Length: 397
Image (tube, rainbow, N blue to C red; front, side, top):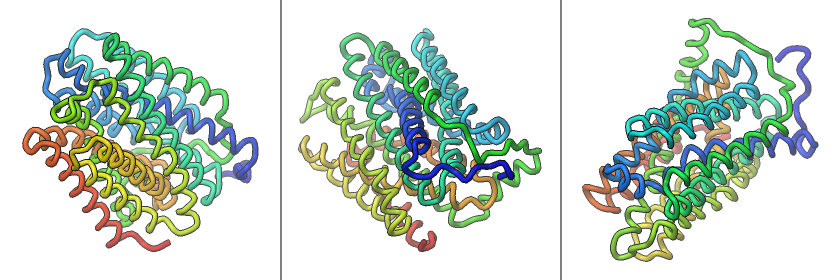
């Protein structure tokens, strides 16, 4: 921070409200596009002649691109500013989102989804660093919760709009409608995001950039936070990737438009993530993070019951627990950085989306091997390991 830096954005001010609105809509624009194919996977599998885990590559390709994009975008944001870098990144993502549905072959679709994901990587790479610089530590927890709630609304929007449109017209039309919504959200972000007060442009040489990145990996605390993202996000995405396949089979035999309403469970994340930020500022981050993981595991266990209402309850509980834990961990990755702050949040997101790519695909393998119990069992193991690491390593704060 230089001498011209302002005191930061105070909570309750018009600038604070603009920041919250901007980050909320940015979260929607990012995650609506990222996950719009998820509710369409059975249609994509049938149309393209691929298996369930093959269709899930439409998600994994984008999340892999995002995982690989977050670190380069963190350096671009350091040099050009967080806000302008995020605006360029999300705008380019909208372009690749359109290309992903107009190209003629499935491999080309996956390539466009990968590039779309790389562009989307600019948002999670920089959003938490942007708000951490512009508000105080206590306000950062609440602002991070608002951003995370926007990501949950985005995930819901992408899924619950794309699937009914896709079933009535085509899966391509479903994805295009979601892209149009994302463009409107990008325009809202551009109009409302306040200019940075506490940012100083910085260009890093290769040696310094490596120090900023790998310096954070010397911290056991940060390692556990990054692994938390890798394990729990992987399990969370696997649950939503393959639940539609389960509900389309006996004894449920539900049509796609009806199964898409299961994504309304995302509203639980919209409510739990800002609340988790408030609780973390009062009680400490560690107990809230542990509690979120345990709630998530309880939700996974409920989905093993062969009753549609119990499954819906399980997905609500799972989603509330996951987003509560994620809101806390994402903010913790930025405020606990020991080297570059944006690089720390990028490493968190690298773990987050690498987990989505790996386990979002492997969940289909377990589904083929052992049915839904295989997928749910994988997620319980992943979340259990993450929780043990938090208990064993993370400090009380």
